[in-house]
Length: 489
Image 1: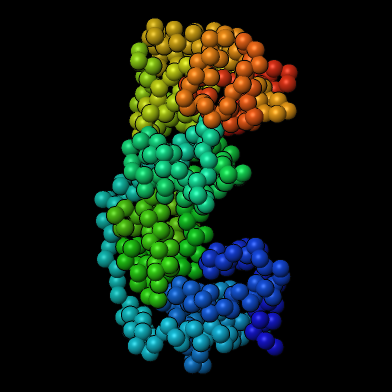
Image 2 (image 1 turned 45 degrees about the vertical axis):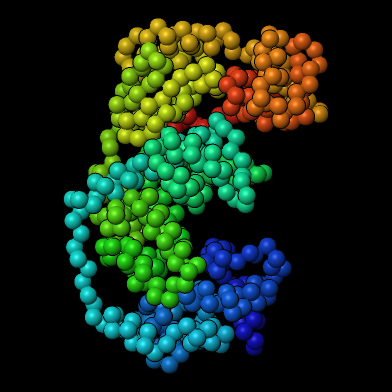
């Protein structure tokens, strides 16, 4: 039986999750596969096999070598099971057998000296230095909290803004800078944040635009420890359960990754470096030193990990300060329901343990689009601050309420119609330099037309500080706010 046929048969008997994982590990484009034979042929190509072998851990390398020499031990079984799922060996009737193509590549990359070195390290059973969790845990806990808060801001922001795809699957530099500014971080942090959000199913690319993903509702309705556990679970999927167990007792993740994957080439090394960076972002480590909840996480004991990290997370409170300059300052982390309520009518300025927000006519108009009334906003601010509102705040809410709905966007067969109750407002829009691309045409004193869709017109006008609202055929306001804020806890 040919190797292709053997591997194709094994593929046909694999679970969908196992097939998805092998495609991810091998970095393969599966769109051209017509059947399992195409899949198997691709897996057995030398370049794909080199990448797979280069990503093996030290224990798996030793197990593969023992199999080739006919010296398999009971200790090797666990690693051989993984090699079978990586389609580097086959398993029939509980017996493992090498795949010749994989054997050839393995012998090209692994020499006798490397095997002896790995076995020597394995036999020495060196002890890792103990970690001082009193120093590491507070830093890792704050890191985890800041990441959870930053991701929440990212997905809420996607409800407010049109964020287009740039190049292939990337985020534009202006968007990265804007997010970085809110978070008080650099652009690389924002880029890693988008990567983590995509990996954890919080954002997705759809029709050339970044949108909230399948796990968005779960995220918004969960508490902070549960959100953190979701991130940790996503990280575990990336590294793989079998590799995670090898790392469980390590105290320096960066060093452990380098020692665990001795054959890592440039591509694999880049992937491993990304895992290390994401571990820092999630709060599994601080300065690469593992936290007290790292081992429990690696062993899949997320309930225990949640319990350990919860001690280090800032306490939730619902107290705010409303200032005359239209800013709102939280004195500590707000619970999700309160956070989302405020975000319906205020823009974020800085997010952290104590966040700051700012109200303006655009943000207040957005809140009214979602169904809030001027009185709802006043009552929320008074209740959370425990004080009467400063006069400028009350005046701005009143003025926004009076102007709400004076600029509306309607769907049209050839694009969109923009209607206003004031012709001067439409003249200002036509003369605005940043709106020239919309190519507005005047139909009458109170109506402009454009070939662009309602959604695009809405976001463009909002970005230029025009409080336009989208309406349906019956004149009902269309809200882009899909957050389950009323049920969030």
